[in-house]
Amino acid sequence: MLFNSIDFAIFLPIVFALYWFVFPKNLKVQNAFLLLVSYIFYGWWDWHFLWLIALSSMVDFGVGLGLAGTENKRHRRLLLFLSLTVNLGLLAYFKYCNFFLDNFVEAFRFFGFSMSPRNLEIVLPVGISFYTFQTLSYSIDVYRQKIKATKDVLSFFAFVSFFPQLVAGPIERASALLPQFHRPRVFDHHKAVDGMRQILWGLFKKIVIADNCATFVDEIFPHYADHTGSTLLLAVFLFSLQIYGDFSGYSDIAIGTARLFGFDLMKNFSFPYFSRDIAEFWRRWHISLSTWFRDYVYIPLGGSRGSTTKTIRNIFIIFIVSGFWHGANWTFVVWGTLHALYFLPLMLRSKNRKNLNVVAEGKIFPRPKELAQIVTTFALTLIAWVFFRADNLGHAFSYLGQIFSASLFETSKTIEQSLTISIVVLIVIEWCQRLREHGLHWGHESRYRLLRWPAYFALIMAIFLCGGSQHEFVYFQF
Image (cartoon, rainbow, N blue to C red; front, side, top):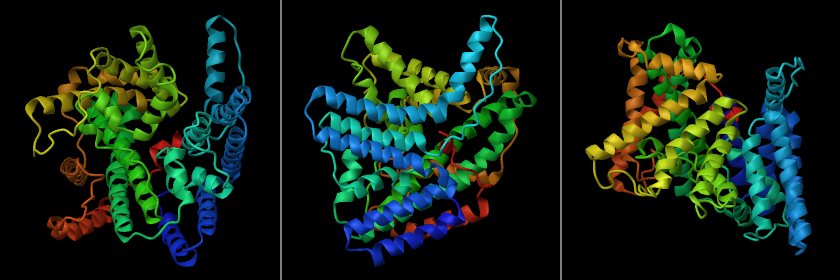
């Protein structure tokens, strides 16, 4: 079920009304209801894959109980190995099986052996990369004794399948989200209102920004040879806004929806395109994934505590694995490698944690140096986004070659005026709100009272009048 669909517009108020008005005082019934509607939400796409979520939930719930019942190190390692094998095995089969098969065949062809195997007809289950990492975090944290195993099977199954963030995150840690299923929840008017604001802002970013940008990008990228370098550069710029509006828009809707039901999810995007270096960009982009890899891969490898050689190795591992997580294609590996190359000089010069504050804090405009840093960082991400969007490496390199040709200085294809205005609105609002949780986070300040309803009305009108053709969320494919 898509957040930007009529189905969800009907589904959400019905679930909200039943949750608060029919089951308001019974925690177990509320959790059972959330589990049921989460499975309905996921099964709306394809109910055949519900068994995958159920299997992951059963395995990790059982592993947690097993870890709680033994102090034997060998037994604990075996239980963790079971969780890793089942979860990563399912992920590898559904997401990477054909990729490895194709590359195996290509390797044999390189040495002169001809093979013609038939690709497996494997459908990638929506959200498998997200809920797999979420349930794995539980098993790993119980193994590390950072959290205690739960004995409440309903709460655990609801935690794994919680519908607002089930298919595209944020990837929640059990230590943060699972306890919220154990505590009684009371309706909070201010939290719910702010949740509705965040949902509205997420819908604007998805429907008005991302979907309109997608129409232009989908027209240009496959036929790049027919366009000037300036048009291709414009298409990459719009793709950067498409993927940001699409993914951060999903996160906004997910976080806002969770707040309607009394839950707090982690912030997943923090205005990343205002970053002054790549390290800051990764502290602000897809925060739940980058911190997951940091805590469960980078730090266990030794992080930056060892020799310079090991630090470099760990940086490349974390970025390449992160790239490969996004998809079974060498383009994602190169995308991750590029970001490792961007990040490495900062790490080696110990400047990767230089920009921890918000840019131009307390000021209306950034200083010229800060503006130059923002533009430079954004330009580097644009080059990497070409690989993220391209069909293959040849496509990406040819596309970049066409950009950096003499045609870069020729007239580019134009975009609709409504999209230009919408992009300006997005940038202005997010710049003004960069110290806050999201674009429409007003708090309780009375000075914004006169702006609120005109802003809501304008955004709603933009969604209905300027919304692009409906597209699935980009990260559904990951």
